[in-house]
Length: 463
Image 1 (cartoon, rainbow, N blue to C red):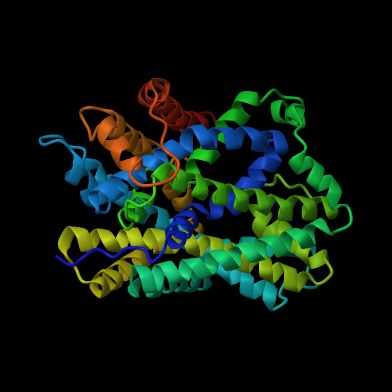
Image 2 (image 1 turned 30 degrees about the vertical axis):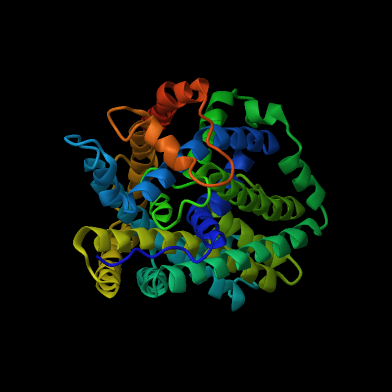
């Protein structure tokens, strides 16, 4: 059997793992959900849940990957007690990777397209309404251009992965992440220098618990805000479908895993928080609502950049930053998809890249058509993109995380002692092993995650 590749450096592991976590959840969803729930007070709650929910499960995913040296389809089979069926989840987890990419590549294509649109000055001279109409037309009418940019994203990701872990995925991700961080700082400095930006900064960084507890109409919403913070802290790390476990399979035992998880969590949170330092000062400077939902990126911000001196340059840099964030996730998940065929069937790298590249393009077509020619097709009021997102975000991620959690704490799975031994191998910060932590992870955290799962359906039913 061919020897498994490993990362060239610890930095490569941290950056590519962070790149998988850093994506649209950080730079698209996080700012608008912070705006929706009142600013800084929401950020405080979000970070608390990130610490008590996200980091322990990330440690478990990395431990399963490192101990098995396999992707999700084989890792449970490698570690599970004889006669148990934990490996059945591997197929659902891998399906989650495909489903995630079936709509994620479409949105990444939009970002790449908007980079070219803004850079070429297509929004200059437009009114606010015309910018909004342009986005609606692109979503609902421009089938060809959406298919083209979706396919371009898939091809770019597969070309990177075709060069292998060290020479392709690790090098490309290092370059993109470093560029992303540099662009983040430059854009934040520019946004903070705008007249009126201070009010946006106050909204974002000064906690106002009244805004957290009550909406603009005075309606009490604290529990809704807490649920949103729990969901965002949990989903931002892409846990539960083996997207993190695969990178654990490429690293040695020189470092303890909990400390690495903290590094990744800090980097992920830094990008999310700094995205707000770009968006909120800019929105307040030009008097627009920062809590407008996903349209914030494709409608509100192009209008902000249109009004800003040097807006074409700053807008181009912003959408380049967004594209890097999306592509870092795409490449990381592609690597998981490609590796599973290498582990399961012993395929050559080029064969796995070619087959999966063609398959992902074909599987992503319904998402584009669901916004255009098939827009009349809905399930429970959701179009194809929203349905795919709901299956992944509200089903496979939380349920998959419970599987990893129980697998690592239960004597019927891999077990607590094996998990702790793997997680704490090497140097660095130890995973806490006290009885209180074990009780919390065994009995309380699974219930919290199942609560998130149930709340997702409750929100869908009651609207």
